[in-house]
Length: 171
Image 1 (cartoon, rainbow, N blue to C red):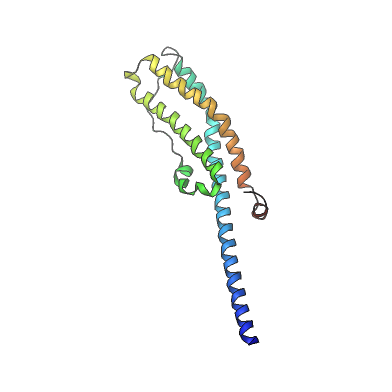
Image 2: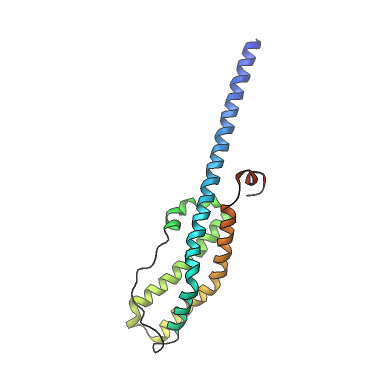
């Protein structure tokens, strides 16, 4: 009878250890993937943020009127390869960060969308409409820039967390 009890205890202990190892291993993989995603998104957003002062300056110049602005040329909007290829993985960062990231990228796309419309339709648009669209872009940049800079810092902190500390503190 003792042999059967020892066998059952050994099997149960082995199964318990295997299950614990599986759960901890998966948790660590998700943690590592989330940290890498946070770092990559921070880098991509940082690249966008560095261009904001120049973009804002050009938009303000263009919105002032036809006599003071350079021609607005047609262009292909830049892409966001990290964000575009990682949307399905935003959940690794938690609901708060995922929401902030989606919001900032949507604002980036709004500015790009207005710029594409102006660049493609500039010859058919009135000066008032051009100024209004470009002014809206400037206003959106003014609101988005501080939020984006704060998000970049938050993503860098998230990316730099240690697994052991994350396990024992709040995510």
